[in-house]
Length: 66
Image 1 (cartoon, one colour):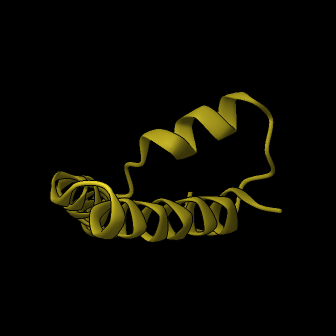
Image 2 (cartoon, rainbow, N blue to C red):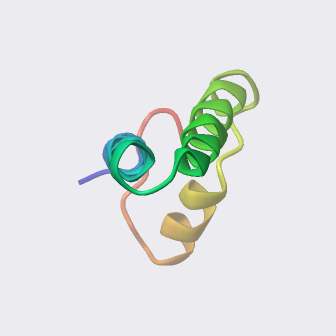
């Protein structure tokens, strides 16, 4: 799995998890959903993603975007 696909899968999982936590635990979890979405948005324009840097350092195969 390339860094690109891993980042997308991880972000999607975090959004779904925070939505479930927001519905069933506390509405404050929706702030985490907003944070993940904002990070995805800024990385689309800047190409900077902290998770991609970590994965690259761990030796995960790079993709086209990162």
